[in-house]
Figure 1: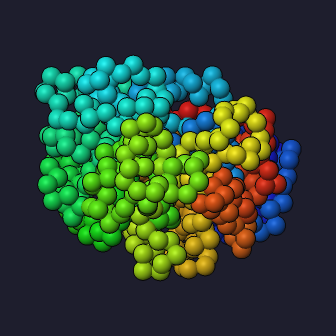
Figure 2: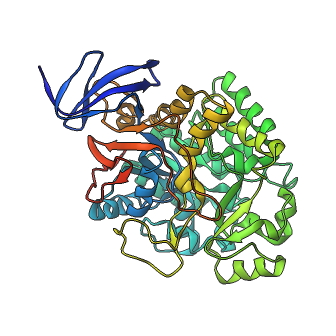
Figure 3: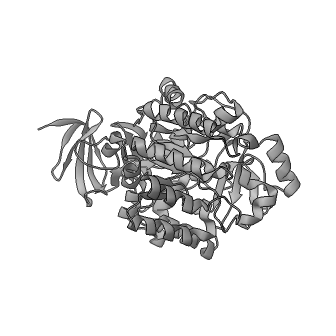
Length: 488
């Protein structure tokens, strides 16, 4: 009999690729799944799951919370791999070096950042592969303007070098520079297509929101897919489309039927979060989304902004400060229906758009756990996957098996374009990485709220990354840093 390092026994194994949903023993050795067995297995450690679900670890395509504390909070929500793909990082080598030097509980990876490369060319910004590079200059108008062709060529050259250095694709924050020439966007998509890697787009405004937009944000994404052949990923389609989500999803469905590859993602919340200096949060533009300044609240501050003057002051003084943007009322069934439809759209991935943690009293020990009580974030950082599974259980928006697929296999396949390492994730199969999540389907739930934003989810019993426990018996293992880099 073969002895394994670890046996997860008597769990309800769900493999979304093969359709397996049955009690199995899972044998793990060397960080890899070595057996999925109907008969009992022996191992150095044998853990009886007693019928709990064991499934692929969740893969977050869209996380900006890339430090140790953020990883741990997401691990308690069932996540085993976190990827910074929408904003990306430039240069990616610096981002990977930082993670390697510090250690990470979860697997991690980065797209290259079109926005930061653009800032480097047009503003002369020195870049270090950190999200702060973007947030520090988010409100500067000079990087948001159309660029002359020589500048565009320099930007493309920088992105191409990052792709050669292992970037997982190109993150395109075109929604933060909504007046650029559409030809530049097409050129970036063509570069991604030539590298065989996806793009990850925060869309510019829809024509319903800005009739004078150079191109409708949804039309731009699907046009690029058709004209260049690139795999275009539509980030957080719920928060950029809002009440126009049916029109946008219909367009995506149409071009898919015609042979283009456009994937989508959504999160189950009605509030977005971004830097308060973002172009689309200018007070004079809020009406396009049916908002007022009172829909915005700064992370770490009490209450929402009082009015336009307070918003202008925040944009002037702290443009990179994280701000809640309450787009849809989650308690209104008619409003939440827009979010449901984005989640239920065929093959939509669940992704968090997690934001970095902020401590009201300053910066604590980055390895300290539990989190200090003054830590704040968006509740989706802590609760997206617990909430998705709870909604599946309580509302039937997705079946349990489909919810697991949207959190694991679907994102693995999105990133898997040009990234062979992802084909070993999102699956419970022999030879795949032992990135596994164990949860109680009757009890798993989110607990983070807008008042208690960093409250971890509950019901996730064990989370295993490359064969090592990051969460065991619902508690973080503070010495566990088994996360590995994912590169193209």
